Amino acid sequence: MHSRYHEDPLRPLDPPPGTMLLDDRWLNQVEEWLGTTASFCERAYGRKPSIEDLRTLVATVLSVGSPDWFSDGDRRVVKTVTFETAARPALPKKLLAGHILALPLGRRTYAFARVMKTEPEWLIGVIIEVFRKLANAPLYDPTVLASGRLFRPLCINHVSCVRSGRWQVVGLDKAYRVPKADERLEFPAAPSGTFTAVLPFRGGELGRKLSTKEFWALSDAVDVEVEVVEKRIREHTGLSKRSPPYR
Image (cartoon, rainbow, N blue to C red; front, side, top):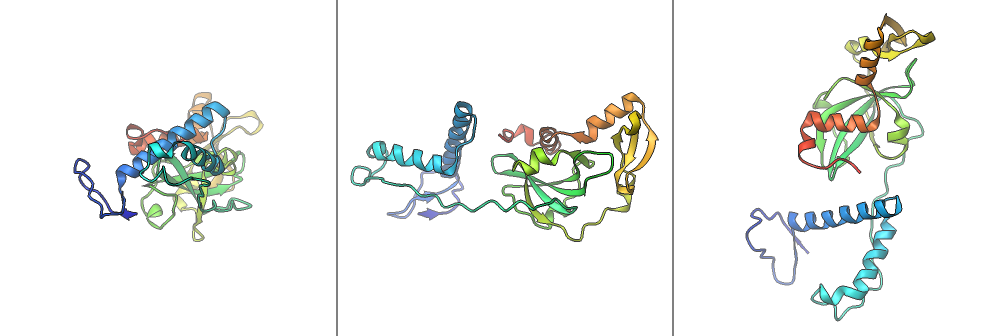
């Protein structure tokens, strides 16, 4: 198989004899088929297909229909199809401040976040900060941190995103320390039924009292579900106009 970038999508392909040109058009075509197949399986059976499901599907279809599609299909019998995949990184036993998370936003699009605090006083979940950088693979590098914050830190339910496997732990910033300026960040709490702004980066210090309106406004802004986080990232980066959300 011959691989190179094909710059002009209208120009006929001209790979060397006996080879196939693997360019963006091939990759996009296969990616579209995979996405359609996965969506069909999820609608029909309530789950995404496994690699084994896909292997069996391809082997079965090729065994009966390959002469119609391939130049050598009438001379070969497909008995098996093998996929080699890399294992997903093991989930750490416990999330730590400094862990880097990869957030899927669509096909080949990822955002990144860093855990700022686990088990914050008066709050349920973990506090994260989301960065501006987007990438086409869940691979962490120093440019993620250098890209800066996309919006103010949030408190999220890590069970619904990290423990479930939706978001991946892809690195650990061992040098992470909470910046002095973040010690004044407020999050909503209701100790003894009183609406209050809590400062988790000052040991859970209770700050100013909040009115009912202020409490719910702050809750909507910083205490959010995983889908809301992903939607905000897509809106702030303009990604919502270019590609479908994570499924």
